[in-house]
Amino acid sequence: MRLPFLPSTGYAFGVTPSSWHGVDRIPGGESPRNSLMLTWYLDGGWQKLRASAAQAARSLRSRYRTQFGENPRGEDCNP
Image (cartoon, rainbow, N blue to C red; front, side):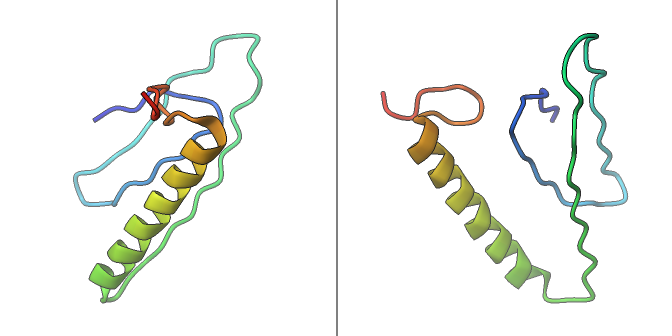
């Protein structure tokens, strides 16, 4: 799966031995791309963290829809 660059958006993914990520270059003249990266290392109990991360994602999605009336991909959430 490849996600396009969209300003003011976030994403998350699980790291596995076969996962990787990258982004396209920003065309000249555009503002800089600032990033915040959080990394968790787990010894166990990943199911509980996964459930918490899913809840956080649902909460962020709901807040975005409430504020902007659409989802991050630009599709109208209130047809």
